[in-house]
Image (cartoon, rainbow, N blue to C red; front, top):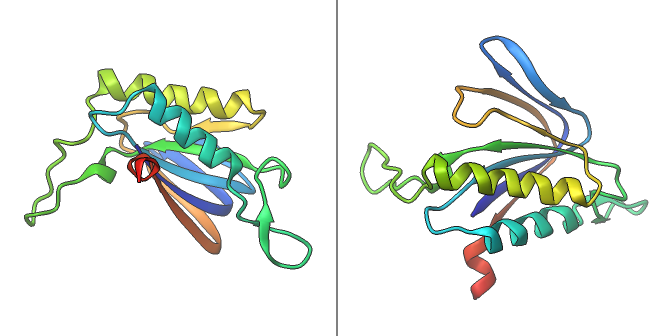
Length: 149
């Protein structure tokens, strides 16, 4: 599972010109699910997201977690994070199919909500327009494959 976590001052998702979700201060999280992922990966990624200390403290150091920063999350599914780009036209055979991806996407959301976070979402499988104002900019990539190293 891969999560691209961007610290934002605001972010939104629109579908067909209508705003579906919006957050102010928080994380825009693009979430890609691998075909071999399971609940363990979802829970691990959610734990990393919820504990990530990338908000600034009073000394300007990235030392504050999202709970203490009163941050919200906007989580958007993005199968293209598992693109095979060996050729000019990427393939997506490593991305999980919806029957696997949707429950794991929902589990990440549930895990974050269970820790007290306000979570907004995109719409799985929809053609979405995602807008954000990056803060910093600060962007961190979380990859569950890294936990085994």
